[in-house]
Image 1: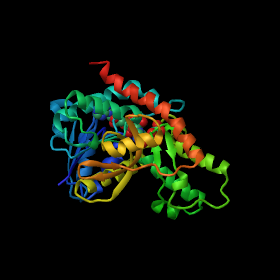
Image 2: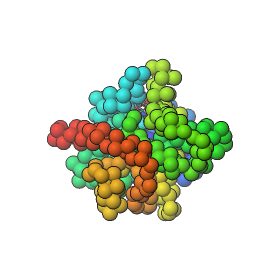
Image 3: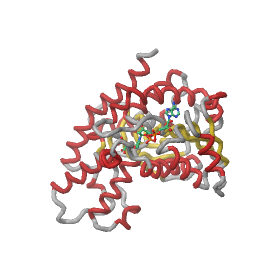
Image 4: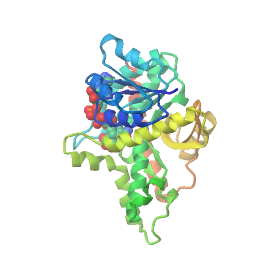
Length: 333
Ligand code: NAD
Ligand code: LMR
């Protein structure tokens, strides 16, 4: 029995993500929460002939507490998306408060749930959730994840495009590490499961790396004011949620990149800090998942000199983003 909850379920990501979770036979209960429209979204999804029982809640009548009760996995895509010309950090002003309030609800009503944060800026919203949980004395770093799967999905797709064969995309894996914004997104193309062409130049490598780093901007620009990635994010979020659900049901050997607290597994977290040469509190790295959440954080492994410069370039911005999230909560104490 697995109860999944989506906070922000009526939005551009929330609706297709809820559809994909309803379609997942491992989900037996699906709770939807938003400040608008969840009764309609829930009624619609509830007619689909899959096992999950779907219920929708609004803030009235303690809806947040009700939807979270009994939750095993909580996915948060609530918040405003970018428009052209904005950075993810520009969303902090509005989304930080939204995520803080939802995290407070989770801390009170589902403190043991696995929390998957999609709301941007992920590099700051994940620390916000952690700090709220600490204030409530319920923080378990093993159970908190920033969802960076869309970067991984994009990397697979764009490498398959370079190889001229999109049918390969589902089987191509490329670790993407660091964080989830611009220079903090670091694809390790040298570790792609599918080799790039022998004549692939360094210029072409830089172009492909930049495309993965700024894939979000490509969608924001194409949507021309109507928001950012929603459908590809729903796909990525459902894929990551499924991995979490399979791990909590006892399946072993599942590894996925995610933005996690480096104390979630102290030994491997310390080794990673040593590898990147900085005492960061959070970093996105391939994580081995287990029934308690983070089982271990995998090393980045051998990097090319170019990849090393990318990691080094990511560190200052990551530190700034993390500090901003932490102090948003500590300053309001
Ligand atoms: P959207 O505006 O379409 O949907 C957001 C939903 O959140 C709306 O339905 C809104 O009513 C709801 N909401 C607002 N305040 C709420 C609250 N207090 N409680 C519950 N629900 C609330 O936006 P979207 O396109 O779905 O994007 C949502 C967020 O996801 C944005 O911050 C966006 O930047 C982020 N995002 C992250 C990734 C990633 O890779 N992590 C990818 C794409 C988008
Ligand atoms: C993405 O990577 O598509 C998301 O983070 C949304 C955005 O603002 O680009």
